[in-house]
Length: 464
Image (cartoon, rainbow, N blue to C red; front, side, top):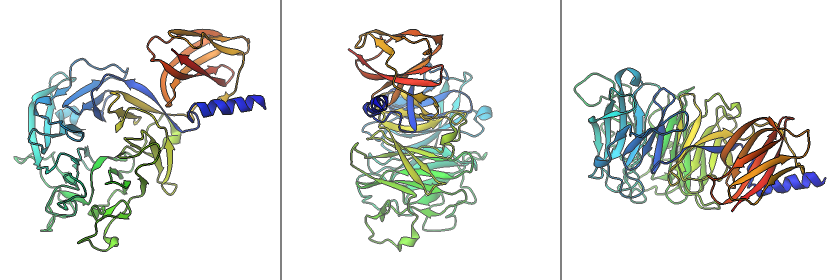
C-alpha cells in the first residue's frame, strides 16, 4: 500500500505526464519563428520561417546550413500575422521541381507564387519566382496563409476575412470577395494564364460568387489539411473573442458556407443580412477561449495515418497556440475530444513526414517537436527504492545506480515538467549508468528508468 501511494504522488508531481496519450520530443532546433512544416516526398522536412526563409531539417535531426529558399527581401513580416505563411509542393514535384508559397508582400497583400528547385536538390532557384495570384489585404491580420494540394491535384488556398475585428467589411459572406474563403484553382494546366478554374468548382456560372471560391464563411483558417486515406478536409478556424472551431468536410462536399460573421462557431455573432441557420454548416468540434491554461487561437493539424502509433490512427490532431495543449478528435466516436499537455513552444503549425508521422513547430521556442504515443510503453511503473540518482541535486552529471541484481537498465528517458521528452538513452543491460547533463538548463526533471524485466520507475532530478 505504501508503494502505491508513493507512485500516485510521483504521477501528480509530473503534471499528468504519463496519464495523457501524447508526449513530444525535440526533433530540430535553431529555427526563427517556424510557422509551417512540409515534406517533398522524401525524408526531409522543409521548415518555413515567418520572416521569409525555408530551411531543410534532415531525418537525423540536423539542419542544412544553406537555406532552401530565402525571399526575405520581398516578404513583409511586420506584426504577428504577416510573413511567409505557406508552402506546398506540386504533386509532380519529383519531375517538375515546382513548389508554391503564400506570403505577404511589401505592400501588405497576399501573394501566391511558384518557384522551382535548382540543380541542387537542397537549394531552390530564388530567381524562378512567378506570381500566380495577388489578393489585396485591407488590414494586417487574418491573412490565412495555408496552401495545400488536394487529392484532386488542385491547389486550395485559405484566405482570412481581411482583418480588423468582426469582419467590418463583411468579406466572408460577400461572394465578390476572395477574403474569408477557401479557394480552389488549377495550377497544373499548360496555359499562358497563371492558373485556371477547375470545371467542377461549385460556383461557376453564379454571377454573385467568384469562380475561384470553393467554400464561404471562414474567419481565419489557420491550417487545414486533407486526410490522406479518405480525402476528407479538416479546417481549424480561428474565432473572434469567444470560440475556436474545427470543421470536417467529407470528401465530395462543396459549396459549403461556414457561417462567419453570422456565427462564431455555433454562437450567433452578427446576423444582420444573414439567412436561416440551415443555410450554414456548423463545426464538428469547438472550444471556449480563456480558461486555465489560457486558450486563444486554434492551430489546425492532421488526421494521423502513420504506422508507428496504432492508437492514433484516424484521430485528428489540433492545438491551441496560447495554451500549448494538443487535442485529438475521434470522428468515429461522436467527435470525442481528448486533451493533452500543456507542452511548450507556441504551437504554430503541425506537419507530417513522408511516412505520416506528426510534428509541430514552436513559434517562440524555435524548435520542431515530434509527437509520440505515451501509452506505447507497456511496462509496469513501480516505485523502486534500490535505484538511486547520485548526486541529486547535481549541476553536470548524475549516476543511475541499482543495488539489486534483478534490476538491469534497458533505456533511460528524461522529461521536463511540461511533459517534453528531452533525451532518450538506450542501454545494453548494465546495472549502473552515468548521465551527462551539461546541455540541460537548470530546473526540475523526471527520469524514467526502463528495466529488462518489463518494469520501470520514475525519479525526480534537480539540476542546479
